[in-house]
Each structure stands twice: as C-alpha cells, then as structure tokens.
Image 1 (tube, one colour):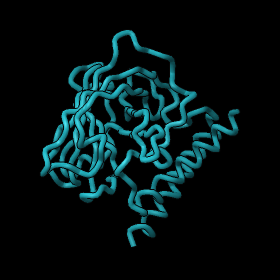
Image 2 (cartoon, one colour; image 1 turned 90 degrees about the horizontal axis):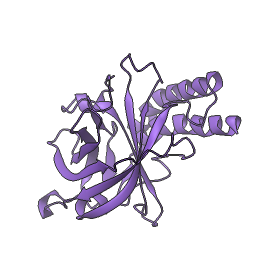
Image 3 (tube, helix red, strand yellow; image 1 turned 45 degrees about the vertical axis):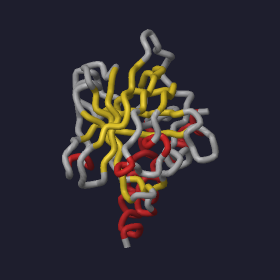
Image 4 (cartoon, one colour; image 1 turned 120 degrees about the horizontal axis):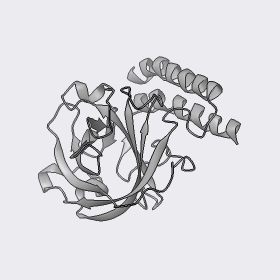
Length: 222
C-alpha cells in the first residue's frame, strides 16, 4: 500500500528534477553549485543494545571520506535555501564499493526530522536523511549536526523514526581541503548503499524518479 501511495509523489519529484534539468542542464540540476572537501570520520562504535547491523555505524574506526556541501535551489547566498550534504564513503558498500549518504537540512524532532528546513548557512541547521532506511534492527534515520557555523565539525547520529538520536561518530573537515565543486562525482544513495542498509520499496519509488531524471540531465549536458 505504502509503495503505491509513494508512486505519485515520486513522479512529482521526477518531473520537478526533469524540469530543472531542462531549464538548467547541468551535472546536478538540483544542488547545482557546491564545494567538495576531504573529511575524516572518527567512529566511536555502538553499544551492543544500540547496534543496527550496519558496520559503518556499529564499529569503531577512522574513515577518510569526501563531503560535498551544496544549496538545493542554488539561490543567492543572502537568501535561505535547503542545504545538502553528499557523503561519499570509500569501500563502505556491501560489495566493497563506495557508498553514498545524502542528507538535507531538517529539524531533529520526531516529526521535523522528516521536514525540509531552509537555512541561511550550512552550519545553522541540522541535516537528516529525511527518509528512513531499512536496517537489520528496523527503520533508521541518519543525521549530521554541525558544531560550528562552517560545519567544519559535525556529529553523526542515528535514530529510529520516532526515537532519540544516538551519536556514533565525529566528522571533521580537513584543513585547506577544498577540491572544487564535486560536479564530476555522481552521488546516488539508491545505487551506492551503505552495507547493512536498504530502502523500503515506498522510499525507493519516492526517490528513484528524481535520480533517474538527474542522470538524464547529466547525459543531456554531456
């Protein structure tokens, strides 16, 4: 039932992304301008009662990764916009390939974590994955909470859709790490999933159309 209901808004998102690609054919019709930075993720590890069956979340360790910061509509910086984080984690997919996690500015409450929130700067609001993933322990949402105005340090956290957030890592931007816009990287959270996570069918139908339209826009641009 949920999958069928999600088909309609999914088609709306696909149409919106497709129109954006026609009006502004670009590598990324949504989140068109961004900056790519190197980051280091220090993972604490989860206690046994908190573990999700997701190695990246559950296990302690240090990971070198990449983050692309962007604004969804590409509005002037003087105006609020929905900010986005595209996180690429090398070797974190089930087959050893790179995994992608995409987050956008939202609230952190039990309802507001599922609501997009425009913000004036990338460090002035929290980010969440918006839609829940399926994990071996059930539905889970991931978040990144900036600790400063530039979001040079962030806390990564996980929660059930209505549960409390549990911090599992610190993310730190490397000094002087800017490496361009990141336009050449095709972030895709549907194709490049973290080991242990998957999307519910309704969530896949909600998102896949917009990513299909974005892939089409890249082909038109190329």
